[in-house]
Every structure is written in C-alpha cells, then in structure tokens.
Amino acid sequence: MPDNIIFNTIPTDIRTPGQYVEIDNSKALRGLPSLNRRILVVGNKLPTGTAAPLTLYRVNSGDEGATLFGRGSVLHEMLRLARRANKTSDIWALGVEDLAAGVAATKTITVTGPAAAAGTIALYINGQKLSVGVAAGDTATAVATAIAAVVNGYQNGPVTASTAAGVVTLTARHKGAFTQGIGVLVNFYDDETLPAGLVLEIANGVTGTGNPDAADVVAAISDEWFYTIISPWSDSANMAIIEAELDSRFGGMDMRTGHLFTGMAGTHAQLTTYGSARNNEHSSFIGVKNPPQAPYLWAAVHGAVVEFNGAIDPARPFQTLDLPGLLPPSPKDRFRREERHLLLHDGCSTFTVSQDGIVQIERVVTTYQTNAWGIEDVSYLDVETVWTADYMRYAFRTAVATNFPRHKLADDGTDFDPAQPIATPSMIAGVLIATAKSLEKAGLLENFEDFKKNLIVQRSMVDRDRVNAVIPPDLVNQFRVFAGSIQFIL
View 1 (cartoon, rainbow, N blue to C red):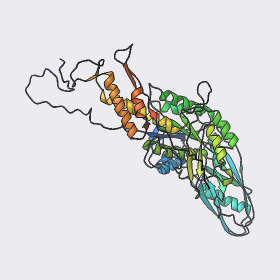
View 2 (view 1 turned 60 degrees about the horizontal axis):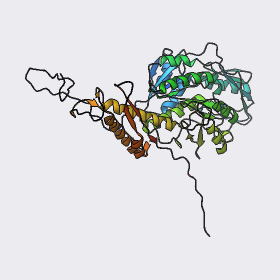
View 3 (view 1 turned 135 degrees about the vertical axis):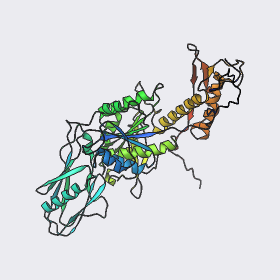
View 4 (view 1 turned 90 degrees about the vertical axis):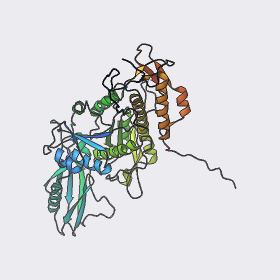
C-alpha cells in the first residue's frame, strides 16, 4: 500500500521484526555525464586476414589489424595510422571483401639508365620510405628489378610489383576506386637525390574502379553505436548511404549521433565540385592535392585526431592540431589561404603545414551548406557545433533519466510528501536548469540567464503521462578570427 516514503526493495506491509535498510544509488552521481564514444574504421580486407567479413572487431594496434584484415590491406594501413594518432580511444574495425567486379589501380615506374654512380633511391609508397641500393653501372633493367624486389619485400605496403624491360608495374592489393589514390613518389625530402645517370618517371596505369557497397556495412552495425566512422570510400553512392543512416540516427527517437570522415584527392576545382554536391551535417572530408599518401590515410588520421580531442571537449576548436603520420604535399600543391577559404565554403575541411613540415588541422567543417529551401545555412557548418549540441542533448536527457527514473507525475502545486517519487514540471525544469549551469561551468553553454528565462517545461495536453520541454541552450563558439585596426597617431 502507498506510504509517505516509498522504498524500492522493502515492502510496506512486512510483519517480521527487523531493521531493513536498502542501498539506493539514484542520487550518487554528480556533475555532467560521460559519453561513451567509439571509433569505427571500415574498409576492404584481404583473404589473408583472419577476420570474418562484415564482423566487428576491437583493434588495439596496427599489428592486430594486419592479422585480422591482412597485412598490407587498406584496413591494416588505416588502423596503423589511426592508432598512432589516437592511442586511447576505443577503436573497432569492420572488414569488407573487394567488389568482385572491381579493378585494381596500377602505377608504373619507368627507369632510364644506366647509373653513372652508386647511390640509393628513396622510394615512398603511401608515405613509407623504401630504400633501393644502386651500384655504378646498373642498367635500367637491373634497377627496375631491384625496385620490385624491395617493394615486394615490404609486406605492409598496399601494392605488389612486377617488372619488364626497365618498367616497374605497381598493382594495388585491393580492387576499388579508392586504390587510385595510393601515393608513389621518389625523393620526398630536399636532400634526397637519385644516383647520377638515373631517371625515374612515375605514371598512372590502370584506373581503379568499383568500391564495396556501404549498405552491407550499415546493416552490420544496425544495433551498434559509433560516434566516429572513418571510411576509405568517398564515392557519392556510398557517402549517400552512410549519410542517410547517420541522419536517421541523429533524430529524437534514436539519438545515436555519428560522424563520417573521408578523404578526397584532387585539384581545387575537383574538390569544390565534389564538396558543393554534398550537403550533410554528419559527414566531413579533408581535401588535398597530389598527396604523398592515399586519401584514405588522411581520413584515418584526421578522424582519429578529431575524435580524440572532441571527446575531451566538443566545443574547443580543432585548429592547429597535428595530424601525425601524414606527409604534406609539395609546396606547389598546397592550397593558398584564398583557395582554402573557398574550399571551406564548399564543405571541404582544410589543413596547413607548419615550418617543420607537420600537417595541421586548419578547420573541420561538415558538408552541410544549405537548408531544405536551398538557402545558405551555417547552423551546422562546424563539427564542434554538432558535437556540442549532441553532448548537451545527452546531458539533459541523462539528468532527467537519473533524477526521475521511476517517478509518478503530478501538476505543480500538488501537496505530496517530499520523499515521494513524484515529478512535476517545475521539478524537471529545476533539474534542466542545474544541468545548464554545469554546462556553463564546463565552458559549453553561455547566456545562462537567457536559458532560464526561455526554458519551457509543461505537461502534455494529449498524454497525461508525458512532459514536453523546449530547451534553449546558447552554445559557446570557437575563437577563430581576430580582426583589428591600428589607428596610429603621429
């Protein structure tokens, strides 16, 4: 029967004498809640990997990625760099088999000789330096054979090599359009030179085509929540599939926010064309011209770094953060500030390069650019905005669930004992206001007094078991630009 104080495990009509005291943790937690954020890296696996296709695996190192998905696979490469850039986040991976109808990209290295002097070739494949020894007098055929031997000896690499008449053909281990971006170059650093008498010409061969279907990935993770998803596939069809899934998860009935990170290589015109065709607040791509490493590696590092720092503070800007493991494009291929300004207006995230050659984040934007009417809309321009709003949703929702887990509902002004598990609109409003104050202290919310004034909490007119609320937090912003005018006096 009802009593003035209600217990969870002690009945009101017990007749056996004793002292019965229960433990209740419903008031134990204080402050803001911790949001469990996981990373998912998706990509192609090789048959040599032990992982079953379309199956989730937690991965703690690049070596684990090699075992699971095949040494030299795209997933192995991505996981190796992602874990290097982010050593603490919970990273999971899901491997997909190559599309049977796909085509593996090839590149050729044409050697002209002979070598007039002994030396060492500095060959870079996806950023990994491979040193090839050359003896004085080596013919083009001998040098090509030596290059192929070194490439094939590097099992962690994304390509295999064959030779014919002084030409090395590099073939991607995978089939797919994403293999087209595998980076191959000679002499990255200024002090690296070819042995005298040798000329190496690198050219594209067969174009890689045919990525796996991301719908299979979406189906495989339908019951899972990943906050950051990193994908090597930037084709429009797969982007649309993953974006549609993230749209549905972001809604009020699911609330499993996720963000997709990809990479794209191309000229300024190609990147702006690609970016302007996209429009989603849950996807970002980093654009680069002639990168030494494949765009999928840029995506892996970019996503891993942004996730690590966003989990610490979703509102703090990502600018100037290092992207470890990435080699910058040559100075002639780096976009000028004016060009980056335009890229950011077309949904392309940008980077800069420090004096000592470190790639750094400049700004992480989503591809969202216009609203449903086609009008320019900056409300979801920055990832920080989306993630801050989502964390606030999680904090307010958690506060209500924690403070009123099994409560009855009554109107304001009802005369009940304070120990009763009853919620009223004003009590719920008080919890929301207290949470807002915590968010203000944490540097996520500003204009707290306006929040209190504009907060609306009411019982539903159609469902007496329901409370409706309009929660109006003012998100803090990011300090990105300072402008001043020096008005000097003589």
